[in-house]
Length: 190
Image (spheres, one colour):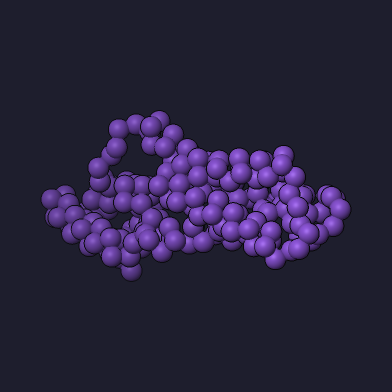
C-alpha cells in the first residue's frame, strides 16, 4: 500500500458513519487533490500529505461538515425508542417499591445521556427527532400498560412528572447540538 493509499484509508476510517456515496465522492476528490498537489510539489507525495494534515483530523472535519448518513441517524432514533420503553415505571402491578422505579430511572438516565451525546455528535435535528420519538414511545408504552392492566392507576403527581419528562426529551435532544453549533467558531469549508 502506498503512502497515499494508507492516508486515504485512515481518512475513510475517520469518516465512519457518513453516507457511503458522499464518503466515496470525498475520497475520490481527495485522491485527485493529492495527485495534483504532489505533482506541484515536484512528485513528493509526502509533501502533499503533510500539507493536508493528519488523516484523522481531515476525516473528522469532513464528517463534521457533511454529518452522519441516514442509516446511522435512523439507528440513533431506534436506540432512543428502545431505551424509552423501559423508562415507564410499571414493571408489574405491585405496591410501590424501589425496583420498578429504580430500574426505570436507570433507563431514563441512559436515555438522557444518549440524547445529550448524540445531539452533540450528530446534530440538533437528529437529537430532536430522537427525543420526540422517545417521548412518543414512552407515551405509547404507558397507554398500553394502562389499557392492558385492569385496576392499574396512576397518581396525579406521577402522571404530571411522566408528562413533564416526556415533553423535555425533545428539548434535551435538541439543545446540545444547537449550543455546539452556536459556540463553534466559523465553519471551515473543506
